[in-house]
Image 1 (cartoon, helix red, strand yellow):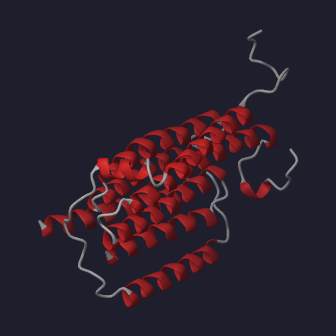
Image 2: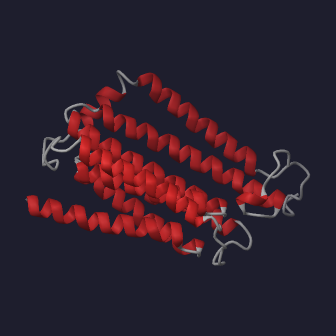
Image 3: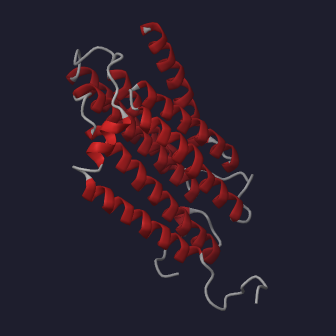
Length: 174
Length: 99
């Protein structure tokens, strides 16, 4: 069981990090979206490994499904965007230094401070969906409602921003 | 657990690199999504390690996922609007607030 766990961890790590690197380095937007979907599926696999089954499901449905479709739609709706080669920024060295510093300090911190803080998280009892819902709808009811309000605002805002203005050429639908 | 934490940091760093180097706004949003995923992995690792019986960590990630999805939808709507009014998709060419 432990071998299987480690094997799936490293396999998922290779898939996820590889596709994330492809997303940030590819020049073609349409291919980057495909790699973004693979990345989201890999992250869903990590949630599954960490005994968060509901989160894995949500990750696949919302991210690999909905968010990727939004990206695809936006790329298709913008004229001249699909399939074109897009220039990268020039200051890649600076960005590499910043992110390298961040990653180095974080890894050092994790391995020094949390050394021996626990075995590689083994198979433990996972939370059921019932426990999750019970906590969410009793202790965290107010944040839940606030988040639903945020979603409503995002919905109305997106419609407002992308809707045609009155009198601004209504596509011949008079 | 350490492996998961380092992996979360690595994914966050890759996303940050994408946000810093890209010029196209859609690519910047993809980098942001990758950064959110890195944070989610870190949070899930801590939640499973520190209090496996508590649903708190998973609820936090749930809220982060929801807000991130709303942010992406709204940001891409703004991007569509910008592409229509400015005729450019490069972040460094958009330098005025009033369209």
